[in-house]
Length: 478
Ligand SMILES: *Cc1c(COP(=O)(O)O)cnc(C)c1O
Image 1 (cartoon, rainbow, N blue to C red):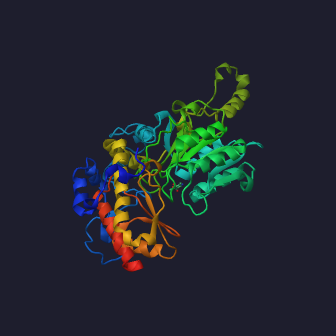
Image 2: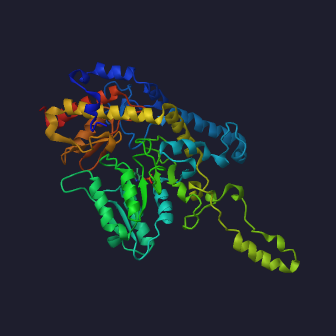
Image 3: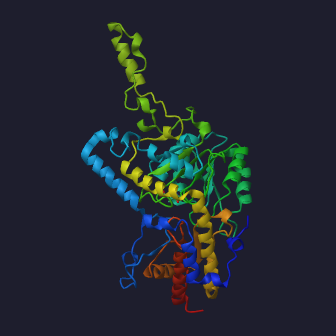
């Protein structure tokens, strides 16, 4: 495979025009999915109330932070209100749209599994991401005096860092010695796989868990997950991944890569609504493993007896004289937890029906579009963003840098642009004033994520030219 998208698509001078982009959009079989989403108007998202063409759609390149609203999610959620109003509690079993609430999680299971390369038994939807990190570490982080370290990235997302640190403390260890972080080399932004492997080799014998992000939220780097997982296993470590920026963005194969556990939020590339329900993966090899302690809740209990207060097997307690024993027996056994095999056994509460249904709408669109076609478009779209930026922003080459790796094998759709300290916010505010919605990570980074479901090549064209105009204003024409 070519290492950069320029090599893949042979762009030339003619590739820089608006017509070129419009032609690409016309021949794009996925272009029709854009109309599945609500795209905010320029005047509604700009910080400039005099923004031109205010009723036109904005250029939304922020799917890495919050995906746009799938129109069908709104319709599906309205159906849930309707059913709630008509049936009340009965809708747990009797649902006119055939999504009984008692098993609402099953409506999204197979599609979700497909997106992360997992078997249905390996995936569930529950909680939110940080909650799932805790649930998974509760089961998979079993430190001992010899093996109590957790390896993460130095620049891990803050919530991941906090969660891991607190888990170490909960077990009575000290993050100062038990938390190992991997940093980029001096003067570099992304991590070398060999440096990650070297850290794992160095600490492997004293490390219980390695937990990295699949795609790094700041740099957009997609780590070599399969290789790192295999190497971690060789060193006797459990290997888990946070797929917040990977799920729905890059093709991961959690089952085949033998990943132990993973979790992700669904409101970024999976468009499930702000704070939407999160995903959790536990490899099939643990499907019947009840030896690990875990955070338990009634929804993780096998379905057949979820609603029962268990009484064990009291048949032999037939004599009235044994009444007292029976009561004691019931008390002792009523909380006996029998987990559902697989990931569903980690569920705690009955899942939010509104949140799950919102996710369902988005996953239906994903499934119709097909993940491999989306990925193929994604590679082209991001490659084109990179190419056009290099051409159009050439006069400003000294004023910005793209820190995301160039190879499509090492990134998803996000490109992270960095600007010098003190200028980034001026650039960012200028973009928003001109109807380009992206996000900033202080102190120097602006992230642009053209997503294949609803972004077009024309969007990319306008994004780059907006950036050029704003940089001209901030830095002066070069
Ligand atoms: C977005 C993101 C989160 C957010 O966590 P929530 O629990 O959903 O609020 C956590 N970790 C990473 C790596 C993220 O990208």
